[in-house]
Length: 408
Ligand SMILES: Cc1ncc(COP(=O)(O)O)c(C=O)c1O
Image 1 (spheres, rainbow, N blue to C red):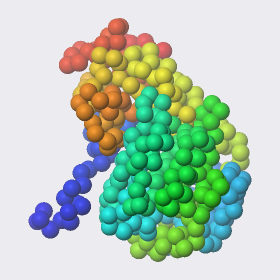
Image 2: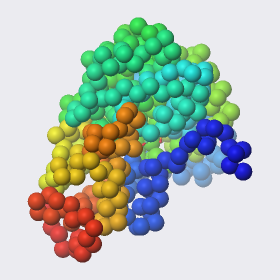
Image 3: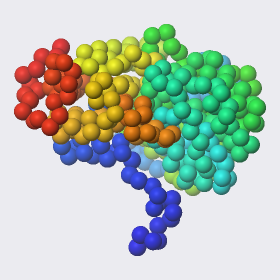
Image 4: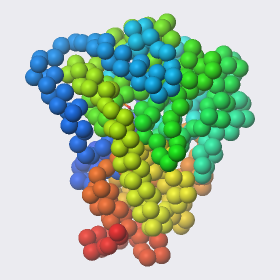
């Protein structure tokens, strides 16, 4: 029967992050692999969802007021004038918004620029739509975008450039200068930008998220995608949106209707409440994640990981392995699962450009720190039990007693 599958399906492999998550569940391991919080969502939002279900919001539904609040928030945050009726489409998470945007834009053979490393979904969506992803490597350890590399990758076939900031997996927030470079490339090659802004409210220190669309001349060539998932700790609710010039938004809407018809009705009602959260909500979200970031950075560096680039946003720590284990991200993660009962993601899963066995692409592990402090402490205790006092991994010995360790 396999021969009946499409060539795309034949070439596609299961998502490594989801596989690791399933493994974590099976082994009862602590999951620092997947980017979802393990603590409760805010009560005011949950109560709104419960009340929507009790009020029988059970059918296909399009809640237009969500678009009004999304437009208002974009005006307040970025000064953008967005028509909530024509320019916004509510989707099932950012994931559907991005996929629908790719189907709306790509003709077979069109190229789409993606920064490397990147969130794993982009490549599949581009390929599903018949496009060709072209990867531009970011330079470690600060994950710098080199303008020359970007310009070299653009051609007359470039349909769009994808920008995810704050960035998964590195936590990089691309500053105004890098946005200028992307805007310049879009204008020079007359292509579009597709942004993924799901971590828009999760930035640290003095960094603030600036939407690429707010740069001069960019609103008319940018498709913004985002969602409730990360900002309100509700990744399972599947509410997101695409914002685009009206004719592109129309195409995305038509595709969205064919794909899923509408986003979950009760959670659209709850989205209205979420999107009206007061400024203090976002401030404490930032502070809370920032303290988790500092906590995990300190503990990881204490057990030999190199963490000189601290995430400026998002909730991932892309930590460089202790020196002696530089090129064995996969082995390290396997040992973590088997011996410590902790799951993280080997960095190589996010890289697409050439991956020589001794290249930097094998030196990183991504830890999601959007977890309760109990989870983080327990995970770090277990990890440190694998390392002896000189920072050496005790590979292939399972006689450690994690509970006897005092890390903190
Ligand atoms: C960069 C990025 N974009 C999008 C998503 C998924 O967003 P959503 O839940 O809205 O589909 C994730 C989830 O990890 C992510 O890290």
